[in-house]
Image 1 (tube, helix red, strand yellow):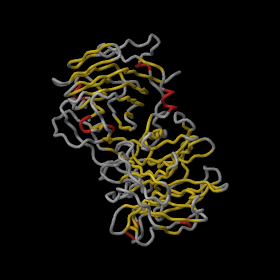
Image 2 (cartoon, helix red, strand yellow; image 1 turned 90 degrees about the horizontal axis):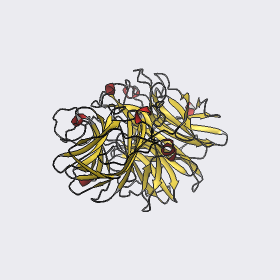
Image 3 (cartoon, helix red, strand yellow; image 1 turned 30 degrees about the vertical axis):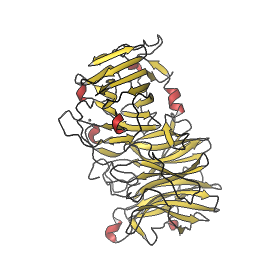
Length: 527
């Protein structure tokens, strides 16, 4: 809501970035722009009609959208008339006392967006909504209702609550009128300064509207508070949701609820140094909300995930942060570009994510991989390339990475592989490039960054848990636009930002054992 104001890993050196500042968090961020604390060796020849990859420049920010000026914070999707209206917290980074007005972008296909600018402005210094925070939109009759967090970082010094739930109404989604008389604060038993991210839905079983609020019970931890209303104006307190395996979370931010395959799904974001979007499932809105084996979709560089739909298809929208000074070795900023995953349902009932179909179709023109050079032992036969890292590192480097691209293929590891993965921003010193790294023995995919110095290995900056087995083929897709990359594998995603990536050489590497790449292909936008 309001926020908390490097490397091919050949030698396993890393510099982890500082904690990302969560959009939903209630910390003061008066100056958001400044961190205060928070061909293969024997690869198949490309088709004759393949386009040179270097010609793949496109207009910016079509896949990972951002406004012409400023950055995207928490996204609040609302479905209406065949479109997803994406209200979001606009991050100007201008150092002003007030910040994060609601802005609006809309799409019907996730590759073309219309931008409407400001929807709900922040208030004056003496008002509760000096800063706006995350919320939701619902339609009742012919009226749209927006519920949002009013955050005034000055109020605790005056003995007033820092956060409140506020209400605005509209007839057209464009002009909004604040209903200040409907403002309310954390009820008795809840922490007064941590009460935010209202999500409103109609509970058909109970015949009333429910509001889910990210809150903290006094003396305990984060909970999702529940309030009920018949008129969307006056709200009564109910028991908080029973959410399995959540007691260690300081806050369960940005709650979102929807139905999928006959189950209710609760999505929320973990406010901690790990920063992840989680989910739980239940047979009823009342819960209990059960944790499945794998309960995350992406890593810490995708935050505040909330959902919207086109027909029966559901998408998870979050944001990937920028870094200070636009340097890969600097700390994360707050806010950045919007990222959308299409949600999937596995046979085991677990949820996953994949490349949205529309993005997949757009990136459908095959392009040349470019001239390849080898690192260490590399062999191949037709569509397969084996990178042998048993004696160190085996790798292959291709041509320039297009500004907008999709990389697909299949990867397989033997049991000796320590790590393997994509390397981007490759110059004359590959060891100083940047990589998305798969660690099969640790069942995870990770991205962390190094500055070329010898530093002790520490926990990765961005990581996602995935179960890997030796000798098993894993299909993957990597979507690239400018400096944003999303790596899809095993029904999960890892989103990150690599400033050194655009129009620089890229490749794949293996260390410790043999990695086999199959059917590696590069695609750019179709005409």
